[in-house]
Length: 134
Image 1 (cartoon, rainbow, N blue to C red):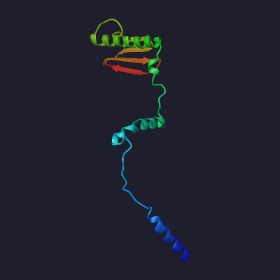
Image 2: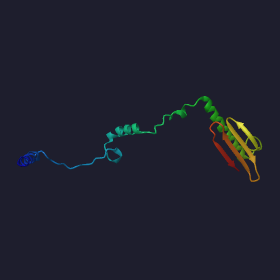
Image 3: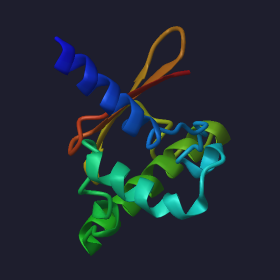
């Protein structure tokens, strides 16, 4: 028992000279919250490495073929002609006569009812459906 007390005193006396304390200072890491601007690239690369929702098809919209571009242009022109026919009141062309039209991958159905006209537009490639009631 006496040896443990002496050993403990010995440790406290010699270790007491080596013990010191300092004040803790917090410095944020993120540059948006006052941290060093040099941490920006490290934070960005760390976030990109953890990103589970990385979209590999970001450039797929720019890799359309010429045929896809032509088809899209044709659909836009048909819908433009339909809109002009509806609002100008012209008696010829798409937009004024009831019936079903299949043009450029679009199926356009125009029906006259007692309350007005119903125009249904179906894109046969994507399955998108739009109905306009006039």
